[in-house]
Image 1: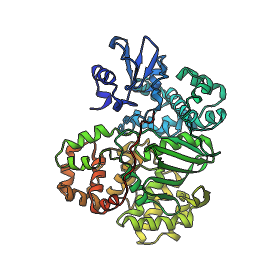
Image 2: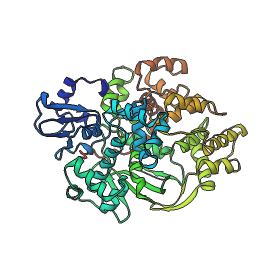
Image 3: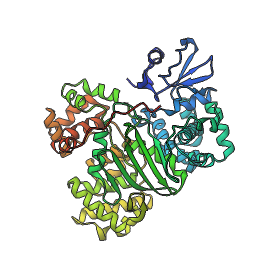
Image 4: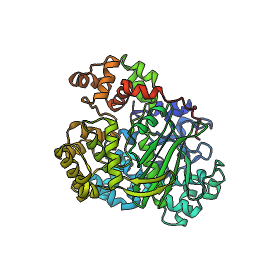
Length: 501
């Protein structure tokens, strides 16, 4: 059952049980106190007559409610709806988290979605209870609270990094949203500090969480010179709007997931956090996904062996397309070699905390010089250079806010891009939960091991029963393949993760 389909009584039972599985998926507003809480708030359950439920904290803000100081609803993982929903509201929320409203305004967000400003505001208000400005404002407040609690940044730097236009706006918004001043919120800090100029903060995660699989996936696909990884860390460089960024995601000694980062501009911090959360699929609802897949006897052993499987996403849409095209019809190891050579030859060298690194080359550079570096069949090189040219000149635009079917059609229209590449890109860029890659060799090997039809036609027909979670089926099939099981077996167990509240 989706959260949007839950009845009032079902939501009320969830808050009465203080069920943490629903944290971040809706908030509970209490009319007698004027505050809103996460479903698992330990306070006494209010009477049903005094309660309203909202899909977003922004909607609760707009209705005049303030965040609970006890349960801190803004400290939960984000709603899984924004990864699952492919409608305009879901696409808008992904773009708002990526900082589009802060960089381009409401008009820029509306243009990306194909609506007028007025129609988009009306649509989001109807669907989510708040317009784009209010949703972006709530996202800024959430980011600022995280930075106040988890970092040593000055108040001015927190305001700037979260996207506020002034210190006054920052102070007023934080006090209005949380009924606490920024100084009061800072007093709740966790007590750990980072080196000067470095961000170090906790990333809330829904359990169960397959850290072994995600870190193993990142390590297996890491581009030499750009990305590094081991059993419990993943680090890379990336170019954001304000300049180069280095970040590292790791499990600490307590089993918490942490993000360290160094940025050229603090304005990029909120988009970085959003992209990292998408990269590691931290806002997924693993309980619902595992329950849906476990209903099928063939998949139950896979889910029991690896609960909380996540779907790796992409940090950069343009880069993901180039990576997917390079990886067509060659092994993962060969693709890493090719991409490492491409990055070393055409990427921008930078000094990172991990040592000399490269930024993955831009589409413009690949369009101009990719033919000099890439090796292999001429048709494939021309296709990669052609796609880079389309990205560079703007005739092809990719973003996490794309409509999934429209993106697929645009990709298939390019020479050298077939269904596997187009579908793989939308799985990784959009986080589309319902993508099947029936021609994928590793997935078919996993299907055979699980007793599922392994031919493309048979797998496609069988997979219809697990919609809309076929992307997570793919993840389980990849992990069931012998080659993946081998590296999972070599990865030591990691400590259990603690509550990140």
